[in-house]
Length: 497
Ligand SMILES: *Cc1c(COP(=O)(O)O)cnc(C)c1O
Image (cartoon, rainbow, N blue to C red; front, side, top):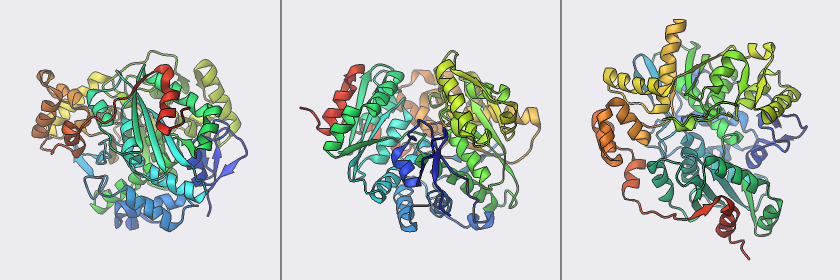
């Protein structure tokens, strides 16, 4: 059955999956949501016999219904192959009686790879299907992780170019090195003299610039977006929850049909929304435990029904969760408002105007499957240390927030349901925070010494993504002022003069 996509804010437009992927946002500024969530049409026992790639096909075909079998399988094959350092793609590691679902075995060793390694292929396929002949230009502002994952995903993909802006003094040294050493003739990385917000605002302005769009069209280019509101990023994220469940069944850890809980370290609400979709498609998930860091806007929302972004913003050791407006939450609101776009549009208007909104009691009842928690930075650090001392297993600061919140959940609820924690980054990506959490004396070593020491104490080889940047030459040296972003785009696309 064909599934079409519509906007959370109510315009009547219905589009195919491939159109939604190309377009990114709906015309009315809302997010695309599937008209209905299809049910999984394979049993847990059948999933237990499948590889990651087979699982991906069985899940994604249900939501991307205008892609042919051949197209979808082609995208999956290109995405989930050699760029991952394990055949299982998303392995489970057990420690202290819970399973860490390691989503960091892709090119950039963070969970963004799970979706960004397939999005470029979905997008070029979508362009072909819709007879778009322009070259697709991906424009991204990044605070660190997304930029590199998008660069790695789009590098060398025919019919696309990618330009990433990052705050010159606002990302970690390892993150910067990862980006400026990016290969691929279709990639460009520009450091801007400003903060992440400046980069983000500048990118939004470029997307809305009609005069630029017209000149690009004349030269055969059009913009598209790889950020986490694109449905082409959400759908691939449903896959690993189904896969994790099936692996637990295969290993005899659970019975078919037994519910599991999932814990997700949350920022933009994309990853946990994928788990919610998986549950609504019939995967036996009990609680969805939403873990925040010091920026606990989601915790407050889930416990009080009030979303309020007017608060102090903290920079933490889990930077990918330092977010005050979780854009994918809009898709959940739409659902708990009984798929009522007017109500959703009203709440989004309040958010834009007052930075704040409150949901109804009825909507709050729709949140019953969620449990919100938060862990301050020190509690996360303590969790990294204690888990390492008790088991030898080392986790990154984002995953540590989730693990600390889960401890609190267990203590408060006494719920013994088997649990999967989404492990969103390799500890090697945040080596300094991880090592100083384990022992403050590590603070004296330099970044690459710490990498070797982490490898030694955790008995995990240094990931390829880190080995590469030790020696890789710097290929991108362009910098610009906040007001120079348009010229940077023009130079990249050869539009000057
Ligand atoms: C992006 C990211 C998150 C947050 O995921 P959302 O889908 O935005 O909630 C958590 N951890 C890491 C390491 C990330 O890169």
